[in-house]
Image (cartoon, rainbow, N blue to C red):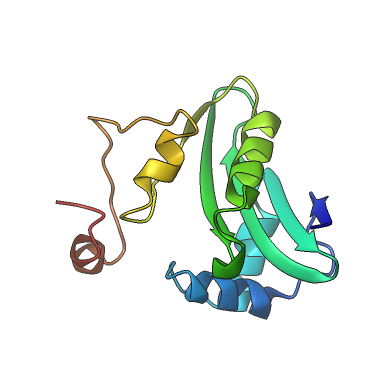
Length: 140
C-alpha cells in the first residue's frame, strides 16, 4: 500500500469528507461546516492511497498547553491496517508538549487506550443536543 500524508486542506473534496464521516457513523455536518472546522484547526492530517482519500483527523490547540483531537476517521475497508494510529500519531507529534483530549465514539475507546490515552474522571460536556448524545452513549 502506497500512502501519502498531507497536512493542508488544499483541494479537499469536503463532500467526500462528510461521506466518510457518515460511513463510519460519526457526527453529520454539512460540507461547508466541515471545511470551516478543518480550516480553523491548528493541525490537519489527510491520508491518501494513490488518489483516494482514506482517512483524516484534526487537532485544535493553543500550541502550548492544550489540544483536542477531532474527526479522526478511516474508511472501513482500511481500518485495522495502522492508518488510524498513523493519523493520531501525526496529530500528537504536531501538538508536542500539549495535554491532549478527545472523545471517542462509543466502542472505540480501546483503540485510543492502545495509544496511551486514558479515561478521565472529571470530564464534562455541554452538547447542543444532549439527549442525542446520551442515546448514543457519550454521556450518562
